[in-house]
Length: 382
Image (cartoon, rainbow, N blue to C red; front, side, top):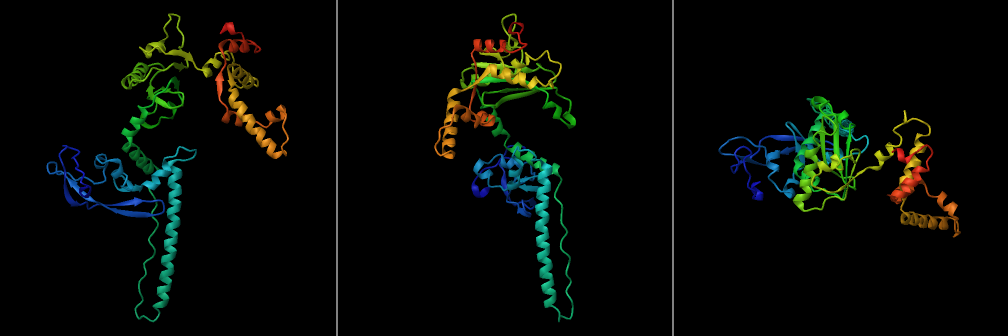
């Protein structure tokens, strides 16, 4: 750090630390293909505390700017270190990308590299042995070094966690800088069921508040549904107030959107906002099939699909643009012949329509009229 002219403070007493030579401990780093060693750099030391501080520890790196911090090639643990190129493979949230899979894949690459090095050593050993035929005393050739297995998958998880914690403040800044014109609050048990270890069973519900882009503004784990939500909601209100953002237009919830007293419980949670509180479409549809005894009825999917078509409609401008694109494809593959409307619609798959066209809600009267036309549905009863 001395060559950069960056003053460092002691993590214990916050006094300025001075250089104390070269850090003597050498770290072994696990790379994608092999292992290498890092020699410690400038050794900072506090004259008052007299405590040894690793120049690559998180306490030191947190005092550097992003440009200098990115120059360190590995993430350290107590005994080993992991190269940042390996960290890149742990970041994607794709299906099947786990620490166990990554550990097995890296170990396979390391074993192949070890085999190549061993074959090269044995080849050189054979050549040297043949050349030393007429030497009176035969040379002793040690066997190749044995393959050293990599640490367990838990170690890779620990390194990944350490890397995430080093960016904790940046992540907090990104999360607390997220806003939205339309908010949705929803509770689920799926996340809490995955809690394991000492925290398993400590929470029953997870409540999220997201915006119209699917971004999460905040989350909270609670022991019961509805408990502890006031602090969550007021935190969102305070966030909007501190930056001068306008309050959201609509807040969608999965329940408690209405009240016989005139003020719903959700409105009280977001006081003093006067945003409209509405029931989201998924739970609105659930109100119509609450009388069913099972969701495995052969007509359940058909009923929900028709109910969804009564609530939503495709944006006609997007549909027209998709038709024009399909008409151009048809003309290039059919010698310029114009397709009929039936032929054009037959070329549009449901996946293409979902990918390229937006959906929007119908008007209130249109929704009421179309739902009333469904067999077995009485709008007045709901």
